[in-house]
Amino acid sequence: MKKIALLTSGGDAPGMNAAVRAIVKTSLHYGVVTLGIRDGFEGLIHGWGKPLGYGDVDNIIHLGGTILGSARSKDFRTKEGRQKAIDFLLKEKVEGLVVIGGDGSFAGARALRAESGIAIIGLPGTIDNDLYGTECSIGYDTALNTVVSAIDKIRDTASSHKRIFFVEAMGRHSGFIALNSAIASGAESVLIPESITHIPTLVDQIKTQNKGRRSSIIVVAEGDDAGGAMDIMRKVSPYLEGYDLRTTILGHIQRGGSPSYLDRAIATRSGIRAVELLLNGESNLMVGVKSDELVTVSIDDAIDKSALPNLDKEAILKKLLTGSSL
Ligand code: F6P
Image 1: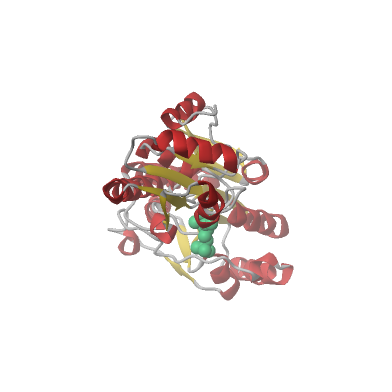
Image 2: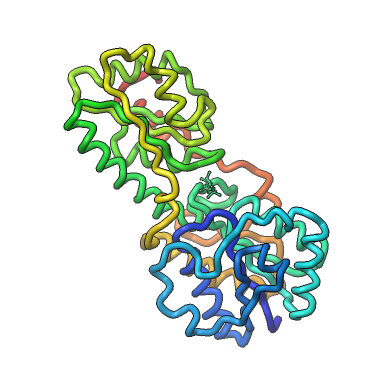
């Protein structure tokens, strides 16, 4: 294999640049050219690629975002769009493609593989951590730390004013960020799409937890079955008269910032592995991490099987110590 292409796709995630750096440097080491594709699959369709050298990837390990740019390409979902991308890859004599992204990006990569025969390797790059086959996707740890530090700050003002805050964390279909940030920030309740939200129970928990206290934090995953933080606050407020309620939606600050140690390390290790897998003739695999070891799973499993947070975690820390209703 003499030439590979590399793109970042879907929602950006801290650590994507560390992976790009590792892939380019490993490829250069093996005498392989890496064609960096601008703006994900959109760039493949339009032929926005350039060979990357050391100068392009030096001093990017600490940068958030992605130097390659990212997009959610509508055109790539069509056969015609994908054919343009395949024509470009064949013209450029690209034999392997590394896609850093989430499940939508992998679905695109899988279709491209089926229609072109070009080898693909996926690296899980999403703050949501919602991919089967890895314990920690690239960007998840940094996002978690961002959320925990934001909640710490909200706690300061909440307890000054004796307020109850509903804090919305990202996670369109998954509660990894909400659950684990709630645990680490000492939140009083957490609502995630993987478990059913029952408003009367939540009201009871809030009343129990708030007794004699100056603040309560309820972390809400944006994809919770009962709605986002605003919806939840609206639903509970008739039962919480006399309490001072507020909502904070953390939003895209969760996607930015310099990657943590863990994200840099995972991204770098899996970037090296991605290139070596392609050179060994492998394809259709995602590189994940389990108990600090790199593992591979099929792209099909990564997309089709569900990644579930650990819903016991000591019975969600005894219902977050303990508004109860365990
Ligand atoms: O997939 C990552 C994610 O950050 C989700 O948590 C969130 O729902 C979504 O992307 C937001 O996407 P966009 O930036 O396109 O609005």
